[in-house]
Image (cartoon, rainbow, N blue to C red):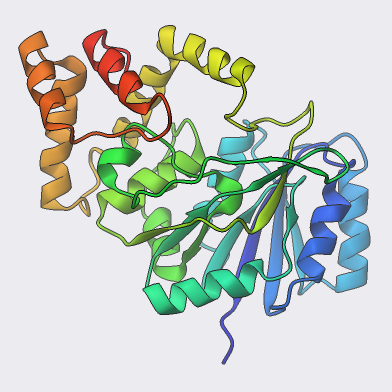
Length: 302
């Protein structure tokens, strides 16, 4: 029997691009999927478009629900933790991207061959008209808890996971995760689940003026992130992530010890912080990754 795939999609005033994304679902080489859409109070034509597709595809293929209207991360978390949505595999989707035709097929192949719980990956950046303008940073390092504590390795629009992972997410009383995709990365690696990073992109990630989260490349983007780092936003988000997972019983013994070391790296004496830095256990990848870890621990910004 072919696995049942459930696509979890969040929308908010997405009338300009949502049809392209919906059409890319219909063009998938793998067709045993259904779509759950959580709309967060759209005031444009988004709901009208969704209902047109529901009429065309049928109620078994697409279901539209009302979101919590507390921001995009809370909207995704409301889908992730809803026990009514079953399936063998779950794929997360933004409203303004376009999936490559074999995305579902290629992901399912990785699930079967690698026996992983969660997959994330790279993306091709495109403009409003879907012309290629760049590529996300391609990581050559294996996903790990030591990385997840300080960096979100892949975007939520590239994430898919199996039913076991969905059950684990449902069991967590998450209330304050700063970003659903970072939370999923931390949660899975903390429990020792096998997380896979797909270097070959499977989606076109549209960059436009209304994008909530865009590319990390370019001087302006890097400078903006440095300002947020300097103001302590990164440290605040890491604290919120730790609060989400610290009481989870499924964290492995090794990762529990690693988490204690991370507390010292963030809050210990200068001697403690320098000692832990010398072991290089916590790694943030990218051109400025080591610098961010050093400055962040030295000045208590992580």
